[in-house]
Length: 101
Image (cartoon, rainbow, N blue to C red):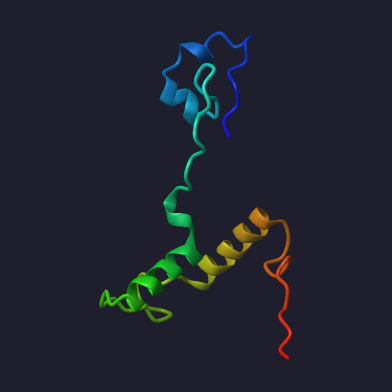
């Protein structure tokens, strides 16, 4: 959510509204809709989206490990670190195991 413009900051109100919004401040008195995530949501979201397109019959194929343009081990490590920061802990924290009967 965006913050209201502080009364003490005179220069901020003179900036154009889109610039203030990018800085994290909302337009005078009005509520601004939350921003959508940039970049498509990250590595795992991109992989899931591609698998969904393939299942729908797009004709695409998943790249093999080591192919040009495929994610490297470093990309997966970085994505795991981002997930840990976002969800506060390990990747498996908060996930309940389902027991089979």
